[in-house]
Length: 381
Image (cartoon, rainbow, N blue to C red; front, side, top):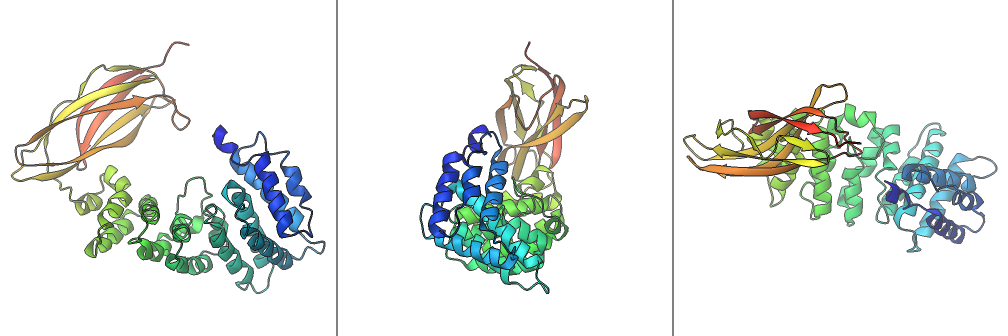
């Protein structure tokens, strides 16, 4: 993450300050200039927040008129957008400042009409081709999910693939790096019209986001996801099967019967050999090399989703399972296949490994086969 932190460095902030001064010379943008001296040593998100706060301070009028502040910032950003240099990671704090100003103006109105809210979202859609606005729109979703979705849904008809992707990526329930929006997880059906509109999109960039969004939904509502995938498969195009397969990948790993059946993986048993390992002791960093044989003894051909499960030792000494995809294979009656895999084991920021007895097990079409143990040894200090 250290290299990524430098995506918003002092030079980036100073370039942004220059663009803002060119777009609105009535403000000196001194707070933005000062923030450039304080980004070093911060994480990327903290850098964005620091600069966004500086933008809001410089933009605010003396009368603290939230509506006027929002309108002024929106006008400034739109003028700056005409300069092609407003692009890349400097856009992140700009999008966050736009969201803050718009939502503050909207929440201060009685009654809450759609003016600042809707225009704030519209401006994020204008910014997103320069750098994704997927993080900033989360705050609009949290403030009023229904209003936000109503404004976002027409983006699915945009000529710009970046705007179409923003509609599906920004509304993902478990978008990486983004804040969680409780309303999205509480109402998973709310974003389905967006996915329905984009599932056949001409852009792979957009279709991949649709599949990832569907996979997010499967974490909380498997039945809804399988039902949606079944509906899409009844009227497929050349890309539907890939979108569905990618969207159901977590459910297939979890051996969900509906997902397995939809992908053509029947509940047929096969003959599986014992797992053979080259060495049953892995010294970190290292790898477990293993192999096994699968034979189809059914009366007809079968399609197989072949995965493996590693049970890792936790700090408490208990075991925690993780499923890894290996391959898919079609086997005719009586056919066998030998499969080999090297599973790397090394320390990562997302997983700390501990010494002890681990387990590896095979999972084929949702059934488990051939478990064996192996040892993980930490290197000497």
